[in-house]
Length: 432
Image (tube, rainbow, N blue to C red; front, side, top):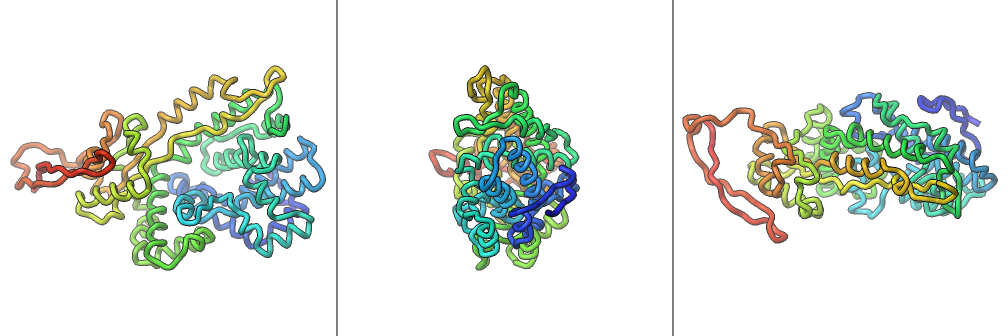
């Protein structure tokens, strides 16, 4: 047995199959995968790794195993799955996951191929465990897999507390001991026992508060969008495959971005924290549904049109449209009056938090600072954004009288109509 001192859970006892897996290359790689990616541009102390988070999940699942009296082979399976659950993460965790998924069709929990690598599969088999069974637990496919990937999983119990600790933002602090002690299985479903509606609500509230302040902070989102764009260019301009990119660590990716001519400009900006700025920041209600539902190709086309108007390179414009907000935790099940009920039916908080979640949603357009004012105006017109529900960067130099201008210029505008971009022209002024 190995005892590891952890900043969140104090002492973690690692033994059995977990101890044997700890020093495999796939696990050690997680030391070089940041837990929160570009959030460290906002919170400098948010430099914790997927490795320590995986240890935390292992620690909490061991506590849940004790609570639920799970023994024998199933106990070993859960401990192995908990420790290995994040080995599929690419560099900077979720930050470039959408990029690699577009090419490979794999998310971070698609670990079947990785878990069958020699070092991991051999170790699992030494302890009488089937690698495929462990991979299924990680995706939540098995009954007990709900402890690893479900609405009440120990994964989010650890990351909320750990992310709160390392960012210094206290909103993610939850009573994970109470949550674990309240867990039970009913009809094959992981639920919270009687008297735990408020316990389940605490998980919802913590996530809802951490989301805008940490996970969706605008600076972290801008840096993430720049990193994604750099990763896209890396795949398009080099022989590096998405599969290779997915198995890089943070350091390997960034060294590569610095070396490749097509990505070194963005890498230098990220190195020096010279991030793009918000040209536009629009609320959910201000963004037309057709824009919220734009495909990857349509968004790149819109970026190119804005770049054309700004007379700049398309890589200097990023349109960032988050997915429609969801709250999977609201489907958690609790026992009330002897019946299994959905949390959303028992808690008035769920409706309020869903409303707050939609109000916190923002679409962004990011460009270098000197272009922000003009880009905001173009993007608003191009995409049909309602100005009452959006923040648009204003011109630093106010327009005053005609004496301030030397020429007029006819410049085209583009707008979205009937599934394609249409062109019109408008007179704009060119300042002295």
